[in-house]
Length: 169
Image 1: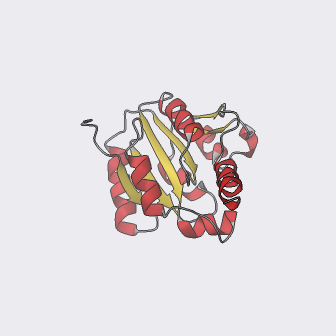
Image 2: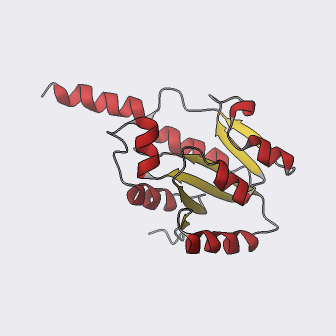
């Protein structure tokens, strides 16, 4: 049985949790903080490989996690499949993730501006100039890095496969 500690979970909607996140960040002042974000609804190989690559870029990996309300606004009323609490718990148990932070906005710009990570990452399907928060990170001396995605792996694809396989029953 693994003895790996669970990652911290913070709620950016909550003032006390936000203050705790700030205190936590200050304890890591000498560390290279990597930030990424997403929905991470039905965790799959592509997510895990992406997060592993992101983690390898620095000392601390912070994952911004869209809240359920944010996901519904972005992806429609049938999403997310799993609750924000379930998604955060699963992510917090993955090796290499040091913190999971819920955010309720449609983009993580406010959270990125609050954290000012050393490195901001997104999938290689994004152009650096289109990545939300890139300007903040670069203006503060950080880097924005895109990470190659695992071909053929996506939550939407997994949902489609489930629908196709089970609607035939």
